[in-house]
Length: 221
Image 1 (cartoon, rainbow, N blue to C red):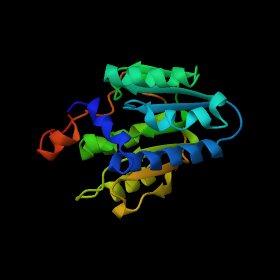
Image 2: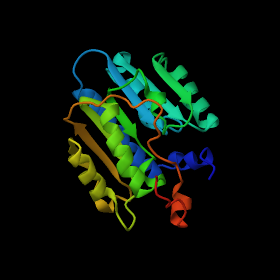
Image 3: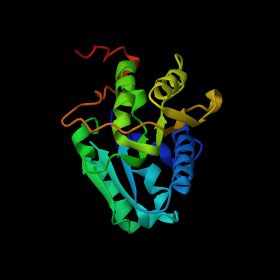
């Protein structure tokens, strides 16, 4: 999978990805609107070209309050995200080229007011989805918002994702309709943030194409 050209669908307004992006951006706007006054922290996992956050932040009233870290493995996508942040004058947006599954990349930025897990849950095993949700208790501050995505193809995992989140003190704020063609959810964390586990790996990125072929089902030891 070429994750650089994969982003091309965002430029087609009627594509599923473009419609999903608009839904994610709306959740980001609402989350920022609801944040209390003062500095805000945001982290984005597998951030790609940063179109979700960087499509909102330049025009948002809280832009000067936000310090963000975007973690993306593909250097081409990371470079585009960095260029977009620079053009918008977002000096407190940092783009890190690296494996977004590693907790070390979020040190000093969590617990965060806004945690973006977009383009992740559809590319990892169900076991790792639950595992990552457990780690989100280390990433999200109390009262913070988690925005996530997952396709809603059969078998539709979105209801189970909501259940796993709710078991871990994340309260559902919004979930896209099953017939929307995509899955976007927003949950508020009402629990106590857990200390960040140093050097841990939250998931193994398999890729939706490999998962569709039946690859990547090995269990973690």
